[in-house]
Image (cartoon, rainbow, N blue to C red; front, side, top):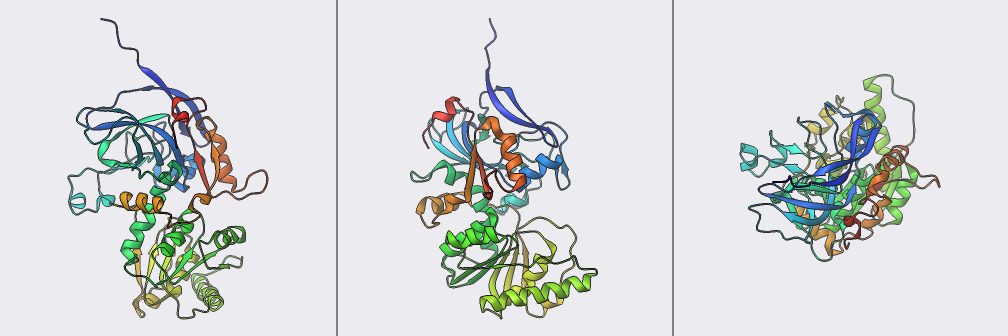
Length: 389
């Protein structure tokens, strides 16, 4: 009996810092409980960029070649044994985390904290689990989500970062049932812009943004994500922790005066991970308000904890998301996030992924236009590239 000829597909594989290769790999059929998806779009994010530049993301270093990408959507091309709720040709969003469904966190619905979580494109676990920068991937059916008819692949790829903000908002008590709250967002990269857009969709009364990049702030205001903005002044690094804390309080006081909200804001989303911004966020919250730590950056931080404790400002961490994808996709399809697709500023085919990462690292293209969200499509000429969006 002659062996069955296995199909080949294209994948972008990271072998080390800035060592990204466009390779052919075997396309295996989906196994029990899996669905094969032709990936139509993958949005690049900060963790992808860290892996590309450094070969690691924080404590998680590459131990073997890895396919990056985890903000993605595509079309079902094959269905494995035991899968009954998906059909070939169906459009889906890919939730990249595969939880164990067997631990106490999973049983409580907090699977983002699952100790046995395997996450596509992360080097935290070994063997690594490849991400979405490939023509096709096999993925468990229970973490695939059907797309609403009016949800494009671009929108669906944004469901992953939007899920981060939906999860953070739930922890902050910010939702459509709690309108008229004031919201301040530190950082207007893609995550910060999504935080602004989500807050506005929930009926926030006042949504403002702070950053050090005036071009990005102008974009946030022009596109209607933020009602007002404030550009932080660039200063020399503080010599002592006490000096840094004093500067943080003085700087945010000036920003609050600019916004005419000297008492602060009900909810503060800290999306930079930068120590000075985290320090400022505590002073930016109203008495009894909430600070949501969304950005990942500085590992050890000096905080003005007495300023938080004496005013009952809650400082909450937020890690990934759980049970958010249906909400995110419905919201993206609803039209309640105007101009959200404009966050995607650049697009590349799969074979030009290395160029895309270099552009993301620079932050500006050859014409001086800023880079916010870069989207990677299918390989040029692949059958996946011809699928409807």
